[in-house]
Amino acid sequence: MNLAIEDIVLRRPEQEDVDALYHFKNDPEVAGLLGGFSLGYAKADLSSWVEYHRTKANEALWVIADSDSNACLGHVGLYDIDHRVALAEFAIMLGDKSVWGRGLGKRITHAVVQYGFEWLNLNRIELSALVSNERAIHIYHSIGFRSEGVRRQAQFKDGRYLDIQLMAILRDEFAPKV
Ligand SMILES: CC(C)(COP(=O)(O)OP(=O)(O)OC[C@H]1O[C@@H](n2cnc3c(N)ncnc32)[C@H](O)[C@@H]1OP(=O)(O)O)[C@@H](O)C(=O)NCCC(=O)NCCS
Image 1 (cartoon, rainbow, N blue to C red):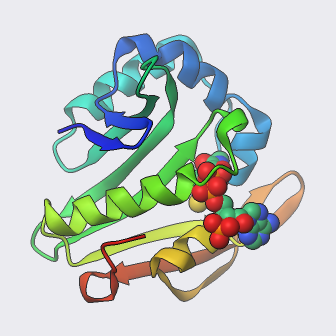
Image 2: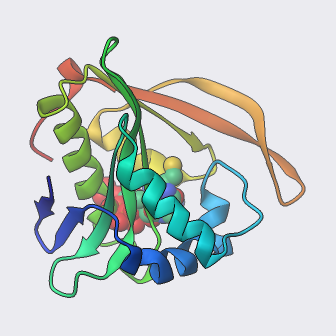
């Protein structure tokens, strides 16, 4: 189901989102904040990415879209949903840098975590973030995620090993209002 958050809608990914995703996912500044590594994406890769995530059963992935224009601003999701243990992994990529710093990342994170607890019946939502991504870690702490340790030098970017912060929130620790 689509989620409405003020002037944002979280909706299913469409092939029309490929151009925006191509721009965001190949942006070195955005990629530098994310935990993984990529050689870069062709539009064909992203077309397959849309189909793959649109049809994957054990995740809830949404495109973050402007509710007026429907333009894709990034994506957010709950991945690797384990219904037996009631846990999933959270990740967000707000790729349109012009909207950073307006409170969207925090509101979207809160809404998706709330969806995970109230609609998917999750008990635990976990994530990992580069320790250097202080803005993201600040948001996660402010929503109630707790630190569960650091994977030391578990990533390598731009000639340096980077630490990865592990965090999680349990249903009992979540406050439904931001
Ligand atoms: C991380 C991301 C989701 C944040 O979204 P955003 O809309 O820019 O963030 P918001 O405006 O909601 O909130 C930013 C918060 O971080 C704080 N902040 C900004 N820079 C900071 C810094 N260097 N250190 C600590 N806190 C910082 C702001 O003060 C604000 O907190 P407040 O609401 O208490 O004032 C978004 O920038 C993004 O997707 N970036 C690229 C990919 C990425 O980093 N994904 C997360 C991977 S773990």
